[in-house]
Every structure is written in C-alpha cells, then in structure tokens.
Image 1 (spheres, helix red, strand yellow):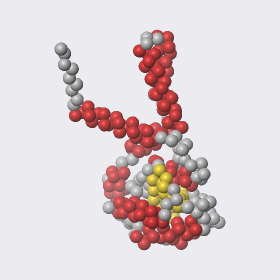
Image 2 (cartoon, rainbow, N blue to C red; image 1 turned 180 degrees about the vertical axis):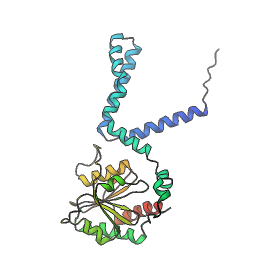
Image 3 (cartoon, helix red, strand yellow; image 1 turned 60 degrees about the horizontal axis):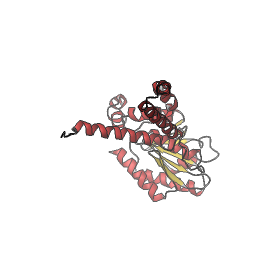
Image 4 (spheres, rainbow, N blue to C red; image 1 turned 135 degrees about the vertical axis):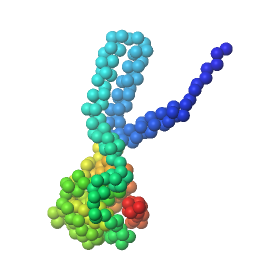
Length: 264
C-alpha cells in the first residue's frame, strides 16, 4: 500500500494567510458597491471557463480563453476606482509619513494636539448645531495628512473654538458649504471638498454630507463628524463605516481616542 504524505511548510501557512488577508481586504474594499456584483460575475465566468476546459470543448474554450487573456485590462478598466483606493491604502504609510518625512525632519514647528477643553468645544459646537439643525461636516485626520483636501478649501489656521465652528457653519456665511478640517489644536481650513462614497448600500435617506463623511473615511484614517440639517442628529464616520445618531458622550469618547492616539 502506498501512503500519501502531505508536507505543509511554515511558508505554506504564511502564504495561505497572506492570500486570505488580501482577499478579505479586497472584499472590504468592494463590499456594498456595484463593483462587488461585477466581481461576482467575472468570477462565475472564470469558473465556467474552467468547466469548459475540463470538458475539452475546444471552440468555446478558445473563445473564452481570448476573453480571459485580456481579463487584466478589463479589470483595470472596470475596477479603476477601487484599484485607486487600494493603492492609496497601500502607498500611505502613516507612521513613516509622520516620523520620517522630510517636512518633519526640517520643520521647526510641531503641530500641537487638541486639549481636552478644545474637545469639549467641538462637542459643544456639535450639540448647539444639532439643536438648531445647522448642517455641519468636520474632518479630523489621525496620521494621514489631508493636504489635497485642505488645498481645496479656504485656509483658516485658527484655534479651535465652539463659537468659530458655529460661525463657519452658519447658513448665511460663504464658508458653511463643505467640510472643516481640524489639524491638531487648530481649524486648518473650511469649505473643503471631500470625495463621495460609491457604496450602494448606504441609507438613501442620508444626504451628501453623510456620503462625503463615509468617502473620506474610506481612503484615509480620518474620522468625520456630521450634523444633520434635516433631523438635527450627530453621526460619526470612520474606516468607511457610519455610526448614525450617536450621543454626545459617544462623540466625546471617540474624539478622545483619536486625539489621544495622535498625541502619542
């Protein structure tokens, strides 16, 4: 009798884990988007092609083989937005960007973290705007530098205060439309333009502010606070997910986490 031994090396286990991690990240990236349905369709076509080859159907196999042969180009065209997001996530080394960037080495000025009092100012401003149903969108990056986002708006560079945040988002001011970006203990810019999420499973009752908050949290490590103009509720977006209708205590806790880690 022949005994069949399957040899599994440590590298094989590592290989399987890496592939599983990659597939999971791809799933997270395209989950809830139109691209997910397209991916399933392409996968079924590939499986069908394997069955055709296994049954030696030469004519159909040749035709589908030509289609599969240009599959890489088709994937780039169909998934260009998702590929862009994926490359952004890979290419953005948060720790290296902050610790070893040339700007950090030669910069004499260090950004100060927000104080507990300034966190309270943010929370109080959100509470006041929610009560008056004033729409607001506030973005707080963690380690990702939102230079392009800041360039799209009006630079302010003022200390964080409840009164200033409420003034910016007051309906009759020219800066109220768009997002405010906070860097450290300062309001960096207002009226900033954010990318909109392409997810299809977002609640249709949510407006552009909520979709923009999800969008910026998908491609960066920032958290985004949204005050609804219609319902007066407060939401928080991070990692591409939205915490809807959160309390002031939840908001304060999440901000302390983000700003506390930033200060370390």
